[in-house]
Structures are given as structure tokens and as C-alpha cells.
Image (cartoon, rainbow, N blue to C red; front, side, top):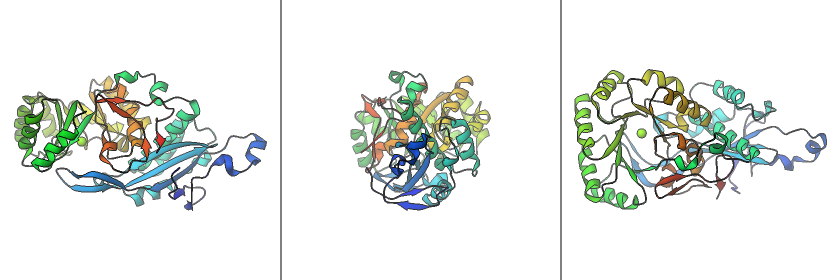
Length: 375
Ligand code: MG
């Protein structure tokens, strides 16, 4: 049991508790009247320590702010998490502030997920990671009450989960070589691009392995002609697709690029919530779903359904996160084309045991809920 301080959410005010409160331990009065308990939300800041400095086209960092969340009902605990890479605009303070307003004790039936998550979404605009943390913990709680993992509740075949890519960040040549060696178990390598030495990075990888790569430019190419030239070059390098080649505001240029590109163009930074999909049809070939953008699993599943109906490609990704949110995202992975679920492998202080990567493939634990266990 993690003994760090959890904060109890709304209804009780912001109270520091030395350990999460067990509702079953609150006395026998509840049992005597045989009434079900009420959900109780608690949370604590938890800074993620990165194994390697994370270098992207626009910034570099060694930690990621994160808040760990749990929802407890009658002694059953559901775990959730909010991870806040700086570009998302959320912080530990904003997440804790949002979560302190969430009062789940007003809901007598935890299975009214639609109603509960609509309430959470309506508390304030934005705050997507904070909302995701509640959604993930609620899914974990409900799955545990039902005694089944979510991929089974959704009727999915776990062997259809794709291989995950492993990220090789922008770095010096010797560090890139070291990372490629570390990535040996993975069948697909993800290459971060968007700086001047993009081709050099791919050449180093290609000198070591012919495994397929996917490229994430993180909005780094602002000239559509240069972007097209790079995509044509990548096409000959066994590249599967290119993620967010141009700045997210450049929709017309991205549509121009997509018409000419022989590699699929996937929206990441440009794509947040389900309402974005209709704007992107014809601009991008596909979407990168991440729980910290989608406000959690409930909307992520709806995104998959809508994108499929529009014949769009789907990848499921993650931020740097513990195995909690990454394993939650993996529950929908049997439905997607590509997975980029290595965020938990990039941190040194995971709190959970969860999904495994076996021969490169996302392998879901047969545990109820989102499938994680506290370490
Ligand atoms: Mg990306």
C-alpha cells in the first residue's frame, strides 16, 4: 500500500489523509442498514522521473508532473491518473483544483457512467487530463465490481492488440545508437523528428536495423514542400506513417500534404476530443487517441467507433505515464491499427504492474478493471 498522502475530494473539502480511507472500515452503521456506500475520490501529486531526458522538437525535460487518483466504494478501489506534459497546459495545481470540485458522493449508482462523466465534464472546460483521471479510476472501479477487464466487457480479442512502437528521441548520435540497442525487443521504432538532423537520425537507425519505423514530427515541419520531400524520403526507409508533420493550426497545408503523401498522416497535437474528428476528415488519414486528451476511456471508445465509420486510421498513444493510464489505454488497443504504449517504460518510478510487451506486442493482463496492481 502506498503511504503517501492522498487528498480527499469535494464534499469533504481538501483533507490530507495519511492513507486512503477504506469505506468498509468506517464502522458497522453502513452494514446495519444494508445501503451501498458512496464513491469517494482521493488524489495525490506524484512527479514522474524520466529514465532519459525527453527531447522533442520544441522542448526538453527530465520529469513529468502527474497526479494519482483513486475512487473507493465499499472497500473496492479504482485507480486513475492524470499526466501533464507541459504543452497540454495543465499542472499539478490545476488538476488538484479541478479534482477538489468533483463530488462523486452524490451518485448512488456507480454504473451510471454516462451521467457521472457528463457531470465531471461539465465542472469546467478543458482540464482533459484531470477528467481522464476520474474516468480511468471509475472504469477500474466498475471493472473490479463486475470482476472483468474492460477489453472483455467490450468483447474484444486481446490477441488482436498490435505491437507497440518504442520511441527513439532526438539526441546525440551515440545516445541514439544506445537507445536503438535498448529497443531490441520492439518490432516498431518511433522516431521523433522536427530538428535539422532528421535524416541523420533515421540513417543511424537504418545502419543498425531494418525494423519498420513510424515518424513523429511533433509539428516540426512548417514548410509543406519540405515536409513532402521528407515524407517521400521516409517512404523509401520502411516508414509506416507520419504523425503530426505540420503545426496543428496549418489545416489547409496539411490537407495539401495528405493529398500528395504516400504515407498516412496522423493527427496528434491537433486532435484532442471527439468533436475534432469531423474537422479532420479529409485533412488527416487518422488520429492518435490518448486518454489524457480524450478525457479517458469512455470518449476514447466513442472516438474509435466514429473514426472507423469514417474509414480513418487509428492509433492509441500515451504520455509519459505510470502503468496505470498506459494499461487503461491498452484496453482499447485490440481495436486500433497502431499502438504507441511505451510511456510507462520511459519512467523510473512506476507505481503499478500492468500491461506487458511480449515479443513486441501489447499484452493485456487478465485482471479486472483496467488491469493494474499497485507495486
Ligand atoms: Mg505525437
